[in-house]
Amino acid sequence: MKKLLLFLLLVCQIGMAQTSKPIKSRVDRVIVFNRGAQLFTTEKISLPAGTHQLVFENISPLVQEASLQAGAGNGAVVMDVRYNLYYTVVEKKPSDPALKKLEKDLKAVLDSLTDIGFTMKGLQNRINNLSTERNILLGNKMMRGEFQRDSLPVFQQSIEYLRIRLENINAEMLKLEREQSKWGDLRSVLEQRQTALQTLISGNFEPAVENPQPVPQVIITLLCERAVNTEVNFNYFVENAGWTPTYDLRADNNSTDIELNHRAGVYQGSGIEWKDVLLTLSTGNPNESGIKPVLSPYLLSFEYYAPSPRKKMDRQVLAKPAASSMTDDVKEMAEESAKDIDGVYDYTTVTQNALRIEYEISLKYTIASDGQAHQVVIQNRKIPAQYNYAVVPKLDPDVFLMARVTDWEDLNLIPGTARVYFEGTYVGQTVINPGTTNDTLLLNLGRDKSIVVKRTKLKDKSRERILAENKEVIKTFEISVRNTKSIPIRLIVEDQMPISSDPSIKISYDEYGKASFNPDTGKLIWDLKLDPKENKKVSFSFGVKFPKEKQLQI
Image 1 (cartoon, rainbow, N blue to C red):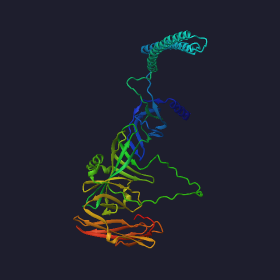
Image 2: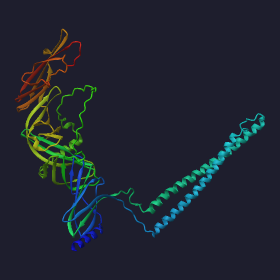
Image 3: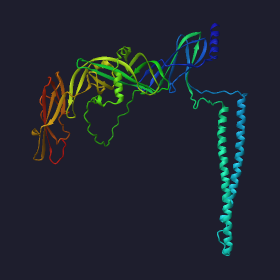
Image 4: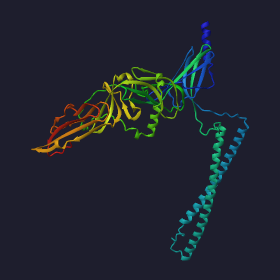
């Protein structure tokens, strides 16, 4: 019997849902993905026993409804959660004197419009009658002189009558059309007045708001078997948000470590401000499909395939020019990054699971809904590195300072651009690409003008000659390097010799000294150690034979 009474009590409580006053919620935590963000809200609420409908406002208008979910603690049960757009309606009492005056004015306008309609119809009938009379006159055979027995005087009299009558008809029609136009203008004014009065009477007109917008809401229905103090939480996904990684690399000749400052440019246009929120930056993307693809049968059939062009050799991304060519935006960002922010990096926790990397930041940030990138600090690391200089004189005579980082997999990096600072000076930008399969991560730290490199073709050791049916070309190049620094350096010099793509092209690799040579790619690498103020020269030579009647660019 007690169980039955308890069941009936619960049923009664369910049927007596209470609608509360809207709660102005605030976002307190956000997970920002590469594209999109999950917004979290938690509110502490005291509720009596029964069923309650809680209405939360200050919600993003870009909610993906399928992502909306809610929860509650301390015994409160979430029965339903939904997204709603609320439209404000201004109610008017039937006995309101202002409403009666509006209805009276509307009736007068409608009566006037009816009278104007009849007047304009009468004017149009008179215009039609005059138009018919004019057509009859113009179609009369006597007026056109088609009767052979008509004398010239009779014809002249007919023409004179036609002229006078047509002038009268046209003048009267013009007068009627002008009058018709005036009545039409008055009708347009009254129709606008009619629309305004009908809007006021309907109760949906708000003089203080020119374009009233609907109010987004999240409505949560809760069941409480007893009075509780509970925390109600809900979250939802919005697409118009994201983040991009940026890095600052700081190196010094006096240190074997590179300082890596990892930042994020967080942007959002969710329609609401994220004020003092805790951020978690995730490399995941909920917009990407999580379903494994399925293989279809691999069917072969005869087809003509056009030959694809030969792929170009990959080249390393070189650092951009020094600070003299910086844009104003880059200068501003460089100055901002130079500020002392060492302490904030201690507030980031990095988590790597099977699907993504997450950077949980325990500092609170405010991100405006303006679509602009807002800088968020992630982490600061000291990276052990080995330094050397590198040059590719065939493409660029400038020498680049390179840092070689091993065991970089533990840094939890993702691809992004990096601003490079060397000895406290901004030297350019480079790219960090941890997606490489190499065990060493190469970082470009910028150009160094104090090492001079020159590549020269040696004319006395280069020649062309005809041998029977073939033509032979021999080329020799010399690369000279000079270290003007006061410290010893290690310099990696890269060049190349050609490789044949046709059996009729024969290539001989005559000289390349102590360089390492890859015959498959033609790549040459010299690993040089130069003392302060030291000069060194390296050279290489190759020969090419091909049919003399053919042209070959070497």
